[in-house]
Amino acid sequence: MTNLRIGHGYDVHRLTEGRKLVLGGVEIPWEKGLLGHSDADVLLHAVMDALAGAVRLGDIGKLFPDTDPAYKGISSLKLLEEVGRLLREKGFVVVNIDAALLAQAPKVAPYKGRMVENIAAALGIEAEQVNVKATTEEGLGFTGDGSGMAAHAVVLVEKMENIL
Ligand code: MG
Image (cartoon, rainbow, N blue to C red):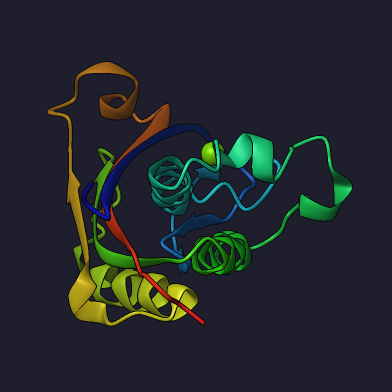
């Protein structure tokens, strides 16, 4: 049996006034932010769900319940670090991550490099193993009309034999 596993993650958060917009661990100046118990970083949530799925850790709702006050307002980068730790504990290493943000606005291209660096640093991997992309949805649906943002992520991980 191969030691390779894939995982897929998907997440959605509503956009609202009076919240900071944090995507990929980068605070982006914008008129609205994402609503959620943590910092509502939809991109990192999709990445974490993909990683959790690949190694059968369930999902982030199970790992970090939104009823737990410990996670209120927490940076999702901290949660990603914890997922990375759990992954290593199970003997897995990340091969690569590909994440896609679905958002009509703002333009996130100037921030993508920092998002990649943040994800790589939180997981202790190289930036070359991480890809972040973004698309608008041509004005269609809840992402297109600006009422929310969504993100997808796929990951490949490998179980290392005889890991110490
Ligand atoms: Mg979420």
